[in-house]
Length: 357
Image 1: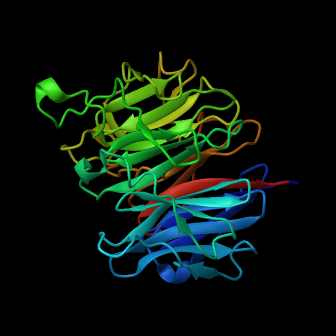
Image 2: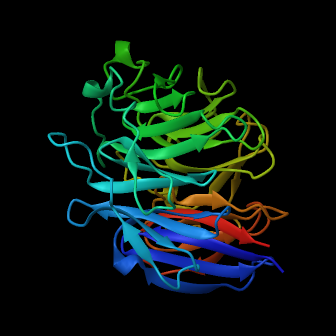
């Protein structure tokens, strides 16, 4: 029987929730990583290792690694640094595995790579050398590279999302980059400058299964691109808000996406009207359905952060999200009904899944 793991990154360490393929009964282990602030916690199915990216100005950046699903841990910051004279790396914010390598996004925005399973890292300098780099400005949480998306058919192609510099794309493994933000708004700029080449505040970007389609939830709208980010179209009609953080792509259906809109950037950043809902589209964002069965429908004033939602690859797919108030919710039927997996955790920063057959 398969094991389904939900990997939870929090402001005070990492946790692992585990169930079998029925996804009815769950156990919880942690906190791991010496209660460091963990911004992103993922598994590499190719190696069986789990990796947690974290740190802050006080701890410094590091990636924690466990090769036995949390029993023992090592961590390394070797190489996670810019050259002397540049603003130091404050934290590791995202981690993504690809073909035996680990890619790590950091604050202030930059991309690093490990070819030895997280023991050391090298800076991919091409992004820092982009001519627009001196003009990137941090959002409220900082200048953070948080979304790393690969093309499984073309390993040299990578998309990244930065708050708040926008989406950038490389097709030569990171030597050169180009902004890909055509069609996404930046409402915080003057009215005649709201569709700039770069400077948008991407909150999360995911790739649709088996296609070139990308989805993103942005500070100023929800978007879809069918051409690898060369152009974006709004998909926010039918949603209660144009503001939110996480996005979850279905593991097999490119038309299905999950979002959690919040009430607005300056209205508290919690679920609208204090009633929790996950919004699902089955047609690529043309129409939306709110999924509420099992979620609190009164006095719910939580938010969900940018990397705190994920799906699993089971049939039917599972969907999971973690709140800023430390509750982990799950669904074993593609969002039709929801249940609590854990509560009273520290603020949840990220949620990812790992299925072991």
